[in-house]
Image (cartoon, rainbow, N blue to C red):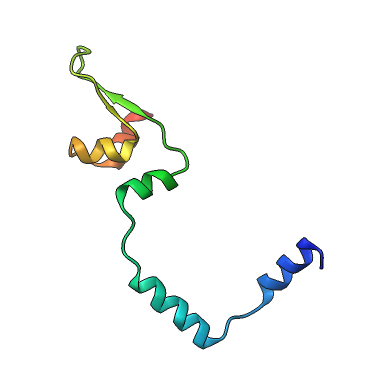
Length: 83
């Protein structure tokens, strides 16, 4: 079977109610992802450096989310300040 055809077949195939319930239960029992795992999965993560206005006290962070948590500033506020 061609790869494209098998993918389309799997896409149309409906799961039984029992299978959906088993998947749902397994998902509910999973532990939350650690911050390290979340950062590894992030797509457009860029390292940033936060400094005072006079250029002193530089702080480097691996992502905007990490920086917003450390300096206790909302991530959305930081994104707005970038533009």
